[in-house]
Image (tube, rainbow, N blue to C red):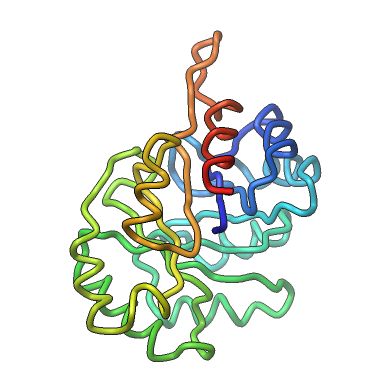
Length: 220
């Protein structure tokens, strides 16, 4: 089970992550309370344990914007959260200067979009330009939970949920419910952000070492 901690913004969080060693961490390069600049992400990336992979999160950014970030920050994965279509993803994948995976995030509430991408992902298998699919709620990063029923309905048409479909589960995951979520969905990995946050003594919201430790230990 792969673990991604998303929305990293400061050096203290990097210190925590170097101890806890999730599989992936995420930098958000689109409008969000956790948005970070390429300059700051580059600095934090250099502080990060090289065994931990880095994901850059984008939402309807232009190809130029994404490529500019890729020139500055060593990203292992580009995660697309917007309305990016197959043509856009193909163009992005053709970037010859950087080798990275592409993860496409899909909202559980957009059944048409969800069905289209899941069907394509399963049909293309190893020839797919997307390396992974991430299933999220309608408000990424909000911590809101949601029903997996629409997703399971689509999956039944395409494959055996227990064997064939590799995806990442995000949205409303906490140390308290992570094992239940995994049992219900059987994902390849989980993506957590607000579920492992606290407000520190200065009134700043940041990742909690204790919450991340509990979550990671439960999974592993």
